[in-house]
Amino acid sequence: MVARAARATDLTDLDGAVSDCFACPRLVAWREEVARVKRAAFRDQDYWGRPVPGLGPPDARIAILGLAPAAHGGNRTGRIFTGDRSGDVLFAALHRAGLANQPTSVSADDGLTLRETRIFSAVRCAPPDNKPTPAERDTCAPWVHREVELIRPTLRVVVALGAFAWAAWWPVLRQVYGQRPPTPRPVFGHGAHWSGESVPALLGCYHVSQQNTFTGRLTPAMLDDVFTRAKQLSGVD
Ligand code: SF4
Image 1 (cartoon, protein in one colour):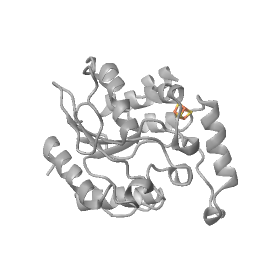
Image 2: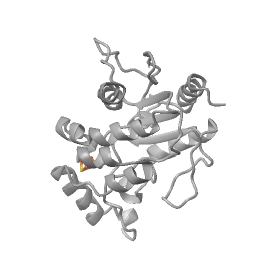
Image 3: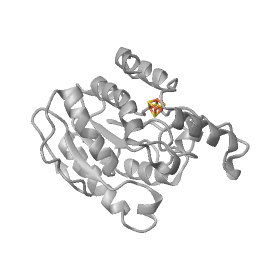
Image 4: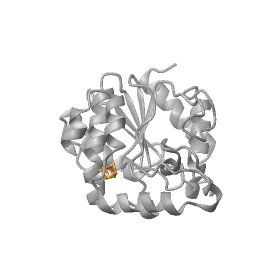
């Protein structure tokens, strides 16, 4: 699996290879069961039921790092953050920031394109209860590492959605940039900011989960502040 990720020569190659990954037995069983049983509202749809690749141009200056696909969102549509309420909130914010051409993301063929931004997750398969195990996180890490390697020439800022993604960045720093992560690790928080030498800046943002957005813990204004900061730090107009 590590070798397959490392062999990917570009993002198209990587996206194709990750979509065919079966390395985590528990997650493979779950993603396929969800795709078979379905949610009643989507019973007439064919679920993707596979790992969900990243989205966005290969010369992105901003990366958005999420946790994992949602069972009836990305695992259904085959596109990250597409087809669920988390995606509604995220893409509306990216559109306000001028980083997406439309404010909605409902299906893989809805015409959405991103500008200067690549979105991907630390774990590429939907996990039960949105909770991958540490072993599953580590097994999936080579896909993240290769994705960052491929966009490294232009990448300037990483927005970590939630503490899981924040923690997943430090191994990337070591594997991709050859840098020892800071000790102690900077603490995740909304608006947290870490910068190192010759590496992308890291910004913390509460995850766009319903739990956060429905309760007002994460508001549209808070998301706007994060993406304004990300654009400033990356030099995106
Ligand atoms: S979580 Fe990652 S490593 Fe595990 S099966 Fe899915 S794509 Fe493969």
